Length: 153
Image (tube, rainbow, N blue to C red; front, side):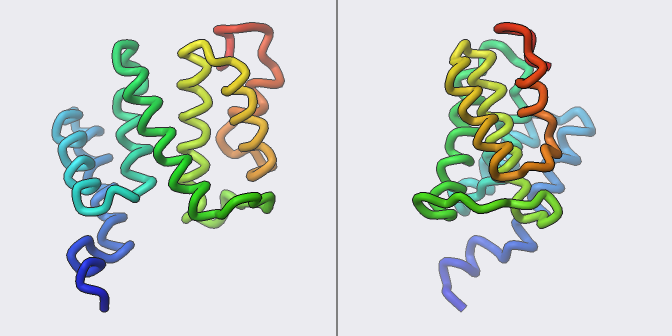
């Protein structure tokens, strides 16, 4: 086994870190969850799910929207890199390893929308619908029902 990989932990161990962070958040310890996820990123900056959880932690705080957007964007860029240039396949929600990337794309789109980047948000949501036509997150169909800026559910 690669020594660097063993220091970071196995994918199953990393998944436990995510669960611990969610449990901290749900118990009201948002700061503890933040530090827990940052420590995970210190072990492996490429953890898409950690970036998505960090974005989710601060999504509702208006002052942190640029930081929120950055975490989602990092998650999306990491996922796109792993998929490879020109990927036009499908990422079924039923395959749980696809979910962090899909959640990141959804969060990135919603945050872009909140920041007023409507064209970028629409492009992201259309791409999300292409990748996951079942629309398990609801974003692309919300866009289709949208009646104007600021009304995206």
